[in-house]
Structure formats: structure tokens, C-alpha cells
Amino acid sequence: MIFILLALAVAPGLAIAIFIYEKDKLDKEPLHLLVKSFFLGALSVVVAILLQEAGKFAYGFLSVLTGLQLGGDVSRPFWHAFAVGLTEEWSKYIFLILFAFPKKEFNEPFDGITYAVMIAMGFATLENLFYVTDGGLEVAILRMFTAVPAHATFAVAMGYFVGLAKFRHQYHISIYKFTGLMGATLLHALYDFFFFLENYPFMAVGGLFALGMGLWLSVRAIRLHNRNSPFHPIDFHPHEELTEKSNVE
Image (cartoon, rainbow, N blue to C red; front, side, top):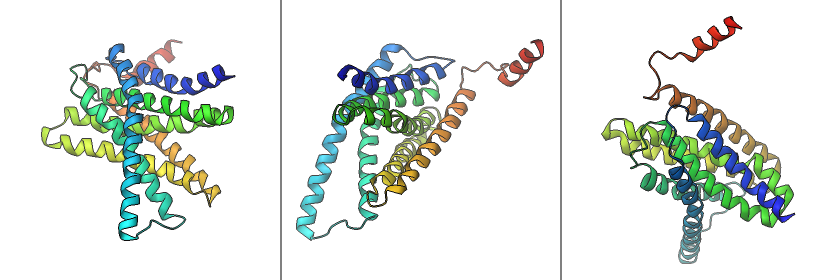
């Protein structure tokens, strides 16, 4: 049984990583860089845990010092979701910026999505192992269709703008990077927020809506970067080619 659980924990992240690799049709990244990105993503789990523990300590210290508490059935889950989203996305972001961004192989905007997703899938896979070994088969199946794809959508949002940052005007680099980080953070926080509303379990539907919105945005981002790739043949028109093939058949 343990081997089945391990397979179910690892399979979603690997499947999504392979899917994104196949979507990079015009100039695929070296496999050794993608594997390194995946394992750096797993390492980013440790960074996120350290940041979250530091945040808990700081919050506890300030609460004792000032007497202030984050209360309320809605406000507490909101700030909790934002803190989780920010720490986890920042942990992935630093590896994307420090490791992948400077590489000469990062030579088209779509590469931002590719490397961001590889890092995110490393993160999601290790996180999934923790949850699945503790929660069992039901958790494994649930996360296969929710949490792991959600991490992928956050990564696409981040990678889309980091990809733009590499190839747009130099004065806009910081703006695009910040937009990527905050876009991923806000999507993550929105997704988590609805599931954190334990007193309103029906609001979990909102989390599924956030996931659906993230998937829709991801599809658009992937199409845009693929279409605008500098490696795209100038005379290649996929819709026309499809029409010609249909006529021949």
C-alpha cells in the first residue's frame, strides 16, 4: 500500500512537468536544468517552512507585546492564506530568479513558465509526499486533482511575467518580476482562503472556482508565450496548416 501511496504522491507533479516540457515545442530546455529546477523546488519547501515558522514566532511575540490578535471567522483565514501564499511563492521565486533566470538557456519568454513549473512541481511533489503519507489514499486522490494542479497554475502566472522580465525593456524588469511574484501569491491566497474557512465548509466551492480560473489563465499564458516565441517560424500559421490538412483529408 505504501508504494501505491508514494506513486500517487509523485505521479501528478511528474505528469504536469512532462506536460509543460512537451508544450515547449520550439526550443526545449536541457533536461539537466529541468531536473535541477525540480529538486530546487523540493528544497524550497524547507525555505517556506522556515519562513512560516519565523512568521509564527514574530506574530506570537508581537501579540504578547501589543495584545493584538487577528480574530474573526473571515479575517484570520484571509491573513493565514495570504501568509502561506506569500511564503510558499517567494520560496519558489528565489530559486527561479537566482538559478534559472540568469541561464543562457533561458532564451525565450516561455522558458519562464517552463522553469517556474518545474520548480513548483518539485515543491508540490515533496509537499504531497508529506500529506499523502499522513492522510492516505483519499488525500492522495483529492490532491491529485486540486492542490498539485493549483501549484502549477500559480507557477504559470509567475513564470509568464518573469519570462517577460527577461526580454522586455530593462527599466521594466523589476515591475514584471514583482507582478509575477504577487500574481502567483494572490492566486495561491485566493485558492487557500476558501479552504481555510472551516466554519463555512460550503465555501470550498470558491476554492474550486479559483482553481478553474487559474487553469483558464494558464492556458492563455501558455498559448501567448508559444505564439510570440522568437523561435516561431515567421511563415508558420498553425490555423492555416490545420485547414490545409483538413482539406486534403
